[in-house]
Image (cartoon, rainbow, N blue to C red; front, side, top):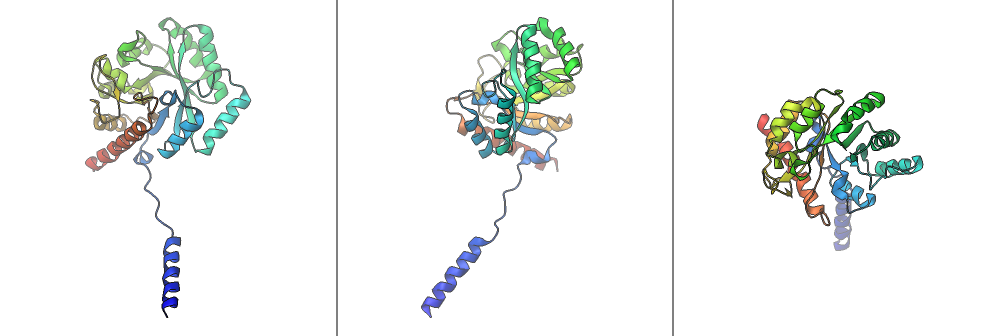
Length: 278
């Protein structure tokens, strides 16, 4: 009898273990018009395999491609292999850049690179005098061109106001990659700038910073001064449908916990602000 009860208990345990367990809920960004992605620069110290491993663990499916993962002179075969590797993790390369452009040849190379990679969005940093030539190229290729702003660290494009003032009279496909951290460090408000310039915001880099001057530095999202609940609400208000890519710039030799914390906080704020709006 004892042996029969033991066998019956083991069978019950096996049946319970074999039952289908419920899956986790989809990430909160799955229900938004915008997508959550990763800026390739986050992984400047790591190869593509490690990049995709971390993206998979964080359930992030969009990558802005940097040239240290896919060089500008890559062959068609190398580009195909790159995309095949992304596909194994369900990741889409949605843009290339940032790419710095200091001559017409470098502009030409960047547009041809994007065409061969198969994306329609370039995140670029052209010298100011090259903007009329970039204007011609977006007409030729029918690409969007998002100028990456850089805060007070360099003279080119310190904030959203500067980008806007330089592109407002150019082709409507030339706009900005709104880096909320750099914009903040140049004394600007990325929430207000998203509202003002949303028609020309084609990509967004998210990060947090400790201050609104050059002395401020990058930290995990939620540990700085940027009002991310307000920013997420503004994304919805202006119907932003692009990608918000994390560009994590702290502890870059060992960024993984910071990446996870930032992704988790941003997703938490997406969920929390939806709750408030009900």
